[in-house]
Image (tube, rainbow, N blue to C red; front, side):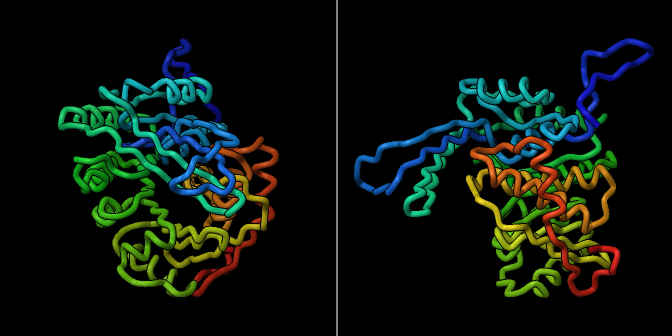
Length: 335
């Protein structure tokens, strides 16, 4: 399963084959500043600072590469500050198929105040791809689809890009018989539902926004997830924060409950769950086992500072500590 270079007719090829490709339309450089007792309108002193090449799809690719999967990435990057991304791709042996645009990839600043247990986000505007850039992206995705089995479409959509872009990409990839996981929110998420991606991973707030109503308990979440299955989606994974995640497929529903751990950072925890879901699907795991693996990935990210996972022995030690409970309508084999 590891990253390797294919041998064709006895010759070692220079381009790797990959099983997963991630699409990041709106990646970001994530800057985290730790400021105790952060105060608006005052001078605040930073105790610690770090910058990471990020964005949801970039994080998913990094996490999968860390656990031995062959991964490629595409989307849009600004040429002015592409360096952190390019270093990450080289270090993690991720195949870079990003479309370069003039200008800078957006920067997201996160001010972490441990003393008051608050986080303040300051998100800068990003790139504005044009029609020619979108055409280049489509060409890159078509090329990746020649070998990638799974695609993860993750994150927000840049200004000026139609809300229906994910729906169009899903339809295109399904015509090529490729599996697609969607992790998005708002109008692009809503527009993509009827394109029937194989897997969707909303958090509870995103699912409530999509449906326009509160989901008060587990039964309501399962019913909501099943309403999405009726529209052609095969797996719905609803993340619930510290409470865990509900995963639903036809005839099966489970609640995955994580153990309590010391949380160092929530950055990338949802993206780690996406990576774990894809890893589970690639291994052909049944729903309960897939839920445990995806939750273990998320726990691994919570225990690290910035979007990264721990050493593999630490990561996979979380898996048996995750408990699963069958929810209404789930067969006994699902838990």
